[in-house]
Amino acid sequence: MKTWVKRLGVSVLIPGLLAAVAGCGGGGSQTAQSTTTAGGIKERVIKAGIGLNEDHPEGQGLKKFKEIVEQKSGGKLKVQNYYAAQLGDDQKMTEALKGGLQEITVPSTSPLVGTVKEFGIFDFPFLFNNEKEADAVLDGPIGKKILDKLPEHGLIGLGYWENGFRNLTNSKHPVAKMEDFQGLKIRTMQNTVHLDAFKALGANPTPMAFSEVYNALESKTVDGQENPLATIESNKFYEVQPYLSLTNHVYTPFAFLVSKKFWDQLSDEEKKILQDAAVEAGKYERQLNREQNQKSLDNLKAKNMKINEVSNEEKARIQAAVKPVIDQYAKKFGEDLVKEMNDQLKQIRSQK
Ligand code: TK8
Image (cartoon, rainbow, N blue to C red; front, top):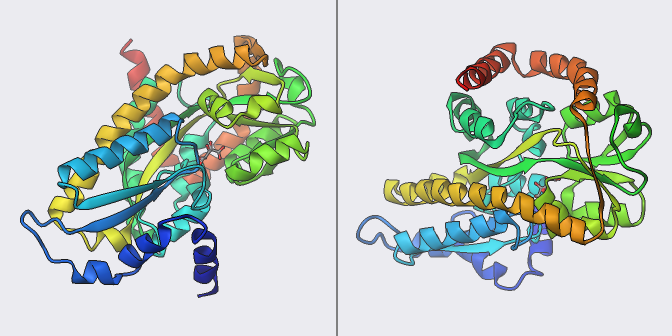
């Protein structure tokens, strides 16, 4: 009860949210009173929250999702979008979904490892060579197998969107070779694979929720952080981070999550509308995100970030240094699952 009150306490700052809570929270009165209409679609208010800004491809994807759902449901299913961690960070929103206090969120899979540890296989550094490989694994049997573990934790996974390949920024010096990681205080996501990988490189990593990152960088509590270029631009990290190294060291998926408590109240027709919209908006989001990469790189240059590449030779050294971390976690997450994924990747690579 205490946490519920606390959550609500934070949430009431947002205009219109109380109405949404009344309409939707834990079998609220509006849901109970609404009558089934032709086609089995009820009037519902769906709160969807993400950690990134509205201008980020993920924000645009969520807008697309709202449009599709409202159009296909004839306006009966109303989606209220909250951006920029207005409803909390990834982990907090995921907990709100489990409790039925929020209907949808689209977090990075990395901080979900406390719920379904197998998501951690996607956190292996240098796992995917390009987005095509990521799509094949995420949209294939491996990705599905992991989403299928969500319902026992009060969550439904409707698919993967893209956060993308991550790059390192910092306020100290260019990071072009392995030794440059030494002693750097780097904010990581709340994920032990990331934490241990940066430790293996000699860095000094600190896990932190995303919405705290800008202030931590500005106050120099940490020296650096790593995220895809679109986020470095959208969250204005360039204002407090002079150096950008194109490390592309890991790919992060987003998982499109729905509260199971909410999902279980839906008719098949309503479920189909949400499922189809999540996939369609996800395709749009991935496309936008990929187009944004080059634009953001140009924009970050224009913002005077000092940008450097990392040679293949150095990447190979970095890869070798983090290999023991990957091997250790492969055991933890399931060697069969990891082998299945690596086999699929080998097959994709041999087709070229
Ligand atoms: C946004 C996060 C974020 C992620 C991170 O909710 O925490 O660094 O990359 O963008 O999911």
